[in-house]
Image (cartoon, rainbow, N blue to C red; front, side, top):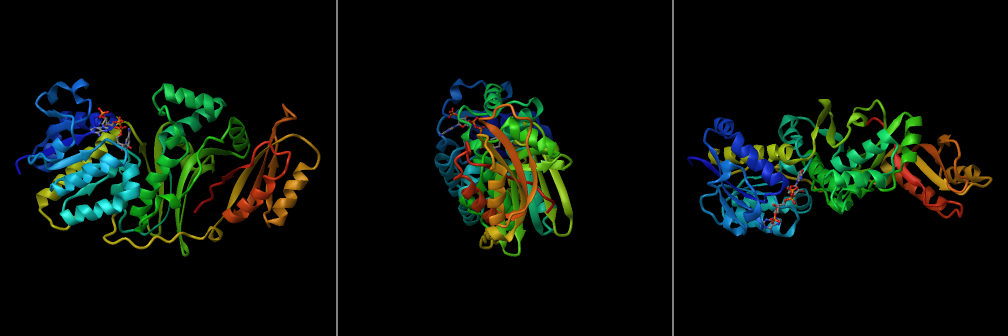
Length: 434
Ligand SMILES: NC(=O)c1ccc[n+]([C@@H]2O[C@H](COP(=O)([O-])OP(=O)(O)OC[C@H]3O[C@@H](n4cnc5c(N)ncnc54)[C@H](OP(=O)(O)O)[C@@H]3O)[C@@H](O)[C@H]2O)c1
């Protein structure tokens, strides 16, 4: 092989960042790999309308992805179109044509990654997906190689830059969710349809991928408890500040003796926790190993160039594997063989919770709520109320001592029947040290 020839399918944010790096950094990439890395073809349905860098003048431009995967001169196909249906076809066809595959696709890899890895193994071709979770943070390599010697006990991460930007702005300026979301959309940080981000689905896919790599069991993405940030309000930041906490959309995975517990939800973090200081569109992951203990990884979770670096690094990795000629490929999941996923029962873990109520004021509300908590054997930690501005829509907060998710849910269900509640209580866990 005289050069490693690459085909890029998808020329949007990630595709164009990847192309830029492959062209601008070509000298150093060749030094790292030992042979030049050449982009042979780029593909998008509207490729003829796109303006590409001058250095891309000799690169084939195609509108049909099959022209990339069927090109006998291409060694590595990068799937950068997103979505699941066509992307799956691109990857499967590329593997069956004997290509190595690199993908940034979190949604597809969270749902179908294990099957696609089997297909790659059967074809004896590399499959790499560093860009699929936490974009510019090389967390896959860390889990797969850097700390592979450890046994991971827990992981907590901020994995969605859009939510982190929104929550940070709400906190800084005391603004409401919808106001900040509209600004994030104008700035291009949030999509016109923001649901994948603000409802926690994007973060859930990333957590499923990372948990599979960290714990070595195929995590079913739909098993992850997910709550988005739509209900978090400026009032919650005011109460969180009183408690010396802040709020972040936190992805958590904990391995206990009874199994794995996984969640994506807005969570109160103590202000001095390292994750609480992750602001704006940044991502971070904190990992707790049984032996090496705490390690922390921070960086850009998205964006054409940070994500492009991850894709290009994977292209190099695939190139090295192809050049080594090994039959057995290095698994992108770290574990040669994955074990059966076992969900931890909800009663296996207790944590403190923050409950925020909106009520129409009347006598005896706290007594009612305290009685419900008592009936469910949940202890009250504190009750907080900011000065009242509207007697018909009065927010206040109760924080409770560690309880199981089941106990809290049962109590909140009973509370939701109270006729003076303007909406069901907002429940957020409060992070404790693992
Ligand atoms: N954006 C980020 O920062 C980021 C970070 C990490 C991971 N990712 C992942 O990276 C992938 C790409 O994201 P992106 O933000 O770059 O998306 P994007 O900007 O929407 O780009 C998608 C590209 O794919 C092309 N495309 C779509 N369907 C196609 C088809 N059937 N045939 C050929 N080309 C097709 C689109 O162009 P045409 O419409 O012209 O076909 C476009 O060039 C997704 O899986 C995403 O989850 C993105």
